[in-house]
Image (cartoon, rainbow, N blue to C red; front, side):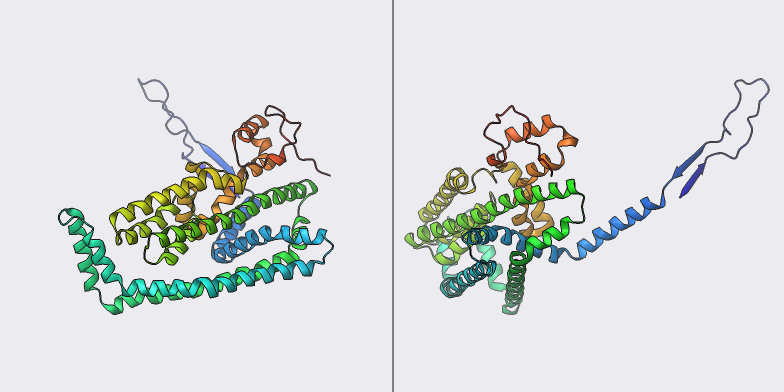
Amino acid sequence: MKVILDSGAGKTPRKTVGKSPVDTDAQKIKIELHIPATTIFKVLGTALLVYILLLLMPIVVTLFLATMLAVSLYPILVFMNKRGLPGWVGVSTVVAGIMLVTALITTMVLPPLFEQSSLLVQNFPNLKASLLSHIPATGPLHTLALDTMQQLQRLDGSKIAEPLVSVGQVAIGWVAELFLIFIFTIYLLTDGPRALHWFLAFFSTECSEKLKLTAAETSKVIAAYVGGQGITCLICGLYAFVVLSLLNVPAAIMLATIAGLFDILPVLGVFLSGIPAVLLAMTVSPFTGLLVAGLYVLYHAIENYFLIPKIYGNRLRLSDLVVLVSLLAAGTIGGIIGAIVILPLVASYPIIERIWLVNILGKTVVKKHLNGATTVDNASISPSQGPESELPTPTYS
């Protein structure tokens, strides 16, 4: 493709009597821009690919979540394979374990959770009155509370039912989504390695080896994230349940479930789960509300500075600023799912930098990041290498 831009009419310069220098305002400027047809097709193909990915984004997110779960469970298959057991035994064991956990949650957690939620809705007027009794009788806080309660009393029951129906529809959608993730996880566990080898056959030997190394190291990060996140969420939920039960806070199981779920979100989770717990604790007494707030903050301090380093090791230790910015950006783009999946991706960046970007950034930059970061597995550096040694360069066969 050839584009020509012409800014003049091609007139010859003309002289004027008594004036100097020569008038050259009619000079011709010619610019030629050559765009190969292959470049145009590449741009159009990239735009089409991005458009297709945007259309298929729900499926892509589902596959990514299933991949995270499969990568976390795959070491179980490797362990059983080393013991001489066939692959189908390992897959069956994993599937049975998932079904058992699902059955336990369905039979032991959901019934009391629904019961407490129903009682909370029925006793909400009494809880509001109790909360109002602990607020100063005058002042902007009391006025705001009265106005809010009056607005709630004016709501039509049919209008309240609409969001409840929407919540029910969302819950059904989540159940279907979880079932689809479960099915994809089983397929990835059974046929994942063969699919990976098939995919790597499209690339050159060097690129294929780099992809293998990237997949192997990022799988450690993802496995550490999923396994560690499950442990911390369980501990957080149990801690919240014990604290709230001992203090006689209403709906302890519901609040503990919220605390365990929102523990997935670092930094922000403590606020999202702590606010409803403190409000319901205030219905008991102001001291109980302050005590719950203090105990929630205490737990998250222990979790951040003691539990997480012990559970995650140093594969997924990110600064609070990086976590907060990543959560806000991913949450804005992808909602809660985006906020959940962004952290292992961010923690995998040092691996990508060391394998793929070392020639672009330079070994000095990558080595400084490697020495200063805490997200890279120490096992990736041999014991003979000191902090000032050369970068570990992958070798390809």
